[in-house]
Length: 219
Image (cartoon, rainbow, N blue to C red; front, top):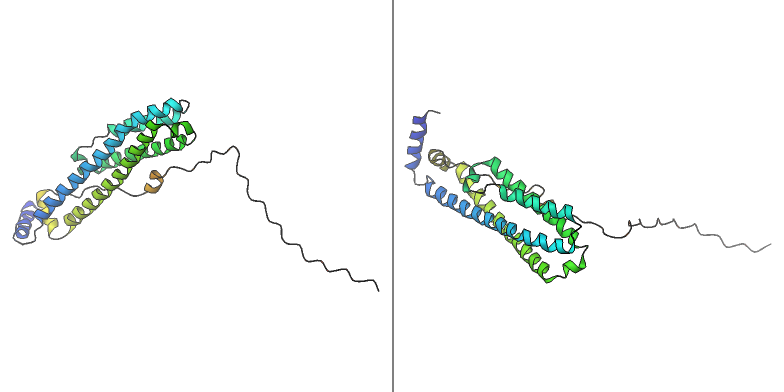
């Protein structure tokens, strides 16, 4: 589309009372604020992990594979750039989401391992760290939901007429959002049976035998 056509269309839109510029500005700021809260809560979680790993290591040093997995997942998650420019780069946003999801999975596996060690579960330091981690996970969920809602409102305005013309003129573009695919699996620890033996299937019920006729008296 020629630039003069875009300019004329924009001028016409700006002459309308509902051009949407102020709404776009407000919603854009709301998205940035919600994103900052998401980043803060993920950083809070990352800050808890080193102490959590060290505490678990003191009781379950033999669980090196799980502990290393958490440490590596944290390093990957914290290496992703989380500047506001991420909101203009869907690929970088997807990378951030994937790295945080992998860290969530690693922490879920760690919590499953903890079930094997009653002494660790009763340790006061571990209980405090676990409570802080659970609280942070809840705050992450709240922050993500607020971001999802803020982006949904903003993207709707960017795509709607006539505010879409205003968005085109001033460079407001659609922003990436979190996906919910596999989120239930990511946020739920896998169920593992730590029993000493495999669970036996229930015994197969035998069909009832047909009733026997009472013996007839001899003639």
